[in-house]
Amino acid sequence: MDLDAIDLCDLDRFASGFPHEWFTALRRERPVWFHPPTPTTPGGEGFWVLSTHELVSAAAADAATFSSHTGGEREGGGTLIEDLPEGYAGVLLNMTDGRSHQQFRSLLTPSLSPRALAALEEDLRARARAILAAAIDAGEVDLLVDVAAELPLQAAAGLLGVPQADRHLLLRWADATLDHREGDPEQLALEAEEASAALFAYGAELIERRRREPGDDLLSAAVHGTVSDAVAGDGSRRSLRDDELLLLFGLLCAAGTETTRNTIAVGLAVLAEQPEQWDLLRDEPVLVPGAVEEMLRWASSTPYNRRTATRDVEVGGGRISAGDKVTLWWASANRDEQVFEDPFRFDVRRDPNPHLAFGHGAHFCLGARLARMEVRLLLEELLASGARITSCGPIEWTRSNKHTGVRHLPARLEPT
Image (tube, rainbow, N blue to C red; front, side):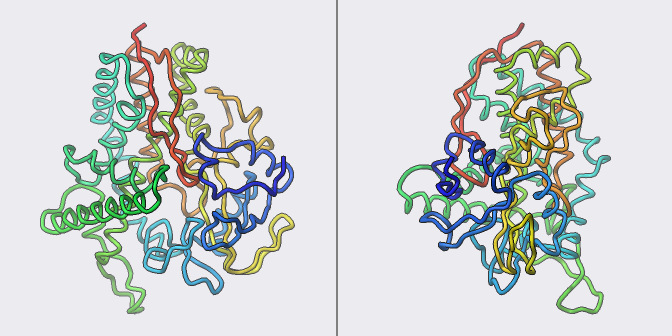
């Protein structure tokens, strides 16, 4: 393979799923690789690519050197290959570091604690059962739309205080901004801009409602919580600004509806393709938690996150300069032959399974417990129903290097 021909910003190369063959070659030959500028790289600027489990984990654990905000003399930053300006970078939860990041997280963690999620489990199980019953009655379904997306969507709406009747608006807005569809670029950009504006307008109205009528939800916790006032520097505390709340609302909408649905869809698809794995789960339900972890590893719904080097540093023989963009490819790390035996084999018995589907370090996914519970509940209820997926695919993938997502997945569910 000609590694110099790799272009990780050419979205057409992601339109059929994640290009694992590229990263297999990179792990073997150039685990630390400088991606040169190409016609598709944002700003015509190159960036570093880390592809092994060891290197990705180490960089993710070192936020002082590899910042989610910015570094060097760079004016913008963030977690996309494309630079985002200050006001996004440095404000959005996943684009902050250090004390600021921890304070934002502390506002939300009580609503996602083991105790809080345990209180939700009975309701979410009933929802999973109803979703699957409707799919089984229908027989032929879109596994992504009718099954995989529904439970995360209903759960996210409840946690954000969004009326269930409005939940599909969140899905529509997220899809418009995360999936780079083929077509006229100007028209698609306009549609994404309109979706983003609609999302923020809805969020602003909901935030004002939560100010007047606080509830037991994540958004109320953020609206009525306080953080240290870094500007004042006197130990005083302040409420979150409107821009901080709006960006947080947008992030939670996307995070709560996007990655888990893709994990469920891709995981159920591979179980349909490998009925012997489904039979193992049916015969040994104790394997379900391990199957959840394998589905997370297999799908790797977030392919990469970007960091910015804050200082000159040597990594694996590569000399990275302050201000350089550095990308951590989780999906590649989750197929690393040095960590996972036979990594391209789906195995519900895989143990250990130190996957990085939720990231690593200070930015480990805040909703990991909820995502695991949603995948587990759907698996358990599908097993309890006695039905199985007898045919599946082909998958219609999203066109994105940032979200390995599914648009549609035709499937058939049949009682056995």
